[in-house]
Amino acid sequence: MAEGSELPSSELGTIEYWDMTYKRDVMNFKSHGDLGEIWFGEESMERILNWMLKSEEITPEGSVLDVGCGNGLFLVHLAFEGFTRLYGIDYSRNAIELARAIAEEKKLNIAYEEVNFLAEGHVDGLASKKYDVVHDKGTYDAISLNPDDPRAKRIAYIKAAHRVIEDHGLFIITSCNWTNEELQNHFTGYFRLEYEIPTPSFMFGGKVGSQVTSAVFKKVVL
Ligand SMILES: C[S@@+](CC[C@H](N)C(=O)[O-])C[C@H]1O[C@@H](n2cnc3c(N)ncnc32)[C@H](O)[C@@H]1O
Image 1 (cartoon, rainbow, N blue to C red):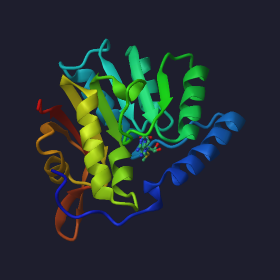
Image 2 (image 1 turned 90 degrees about the vertical axis):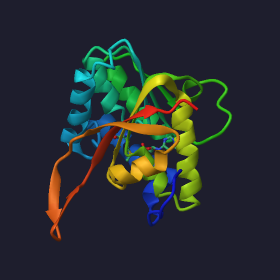
Image 3 (image 1 turned 45 degrees about the vertical axis):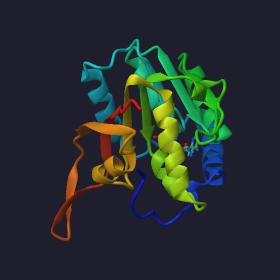
Image 4 (image 1 turned 180 degrees about the horizontal axis):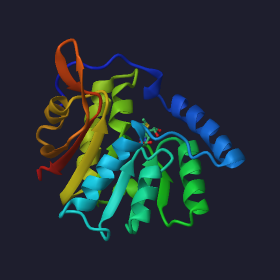
């Protein structure tokens, strides 16, 4: 599990970076209603939403946890599609402030909590529960860029994701740092690939590659 080489570290792997980013976003939202960034773009989010809406394994009554929810826009879209049990966690308190302000303005009932997903011993709160769907867009990527022992952080993340998913549950992840094969390799023993959501590919140096990977994994019940 979690084999292979690590990525060069970056400030995107630190809480200071995200706190600073979302502090600016909170100010922008309050001053002129700007909702902030959609990581990997609008199309990337729509691809996942469309897949979820068509999936026979997902219903609007099912619970969804967005890990590293940022501004919460993914959950906002699900709320508009009729999903009712929506939860978002992020370790940046400014991200949670922004997500709550956006949900309040749109009169949506989404529960948010400031929590470090990698911390151990969650005895209460959102990270101590189990969900039908766990969603991640860019959070595993950010954790992989941590300057301090990223491999250990990735392994802690995979174990935490496995813990918060129901046995029948789905793990939907979008990454721009790891290929589908690398994700499968990292998750061996914890999750198995169920479906790869097709993403646009590009040609570079005679090779066809994708900028973003979106994949749906099923929990391996240990
Ligand atoms: C690339 S951003 C993506 C945000 C959001 N998912 C989106 O698509 O807009 C990565 C997010 O992961 C959050 N994050 C990183 N490490 C985390 C951790 N250990 N626990 C909870 N959130 C974390 C960051 O604060 C940030 O909001």
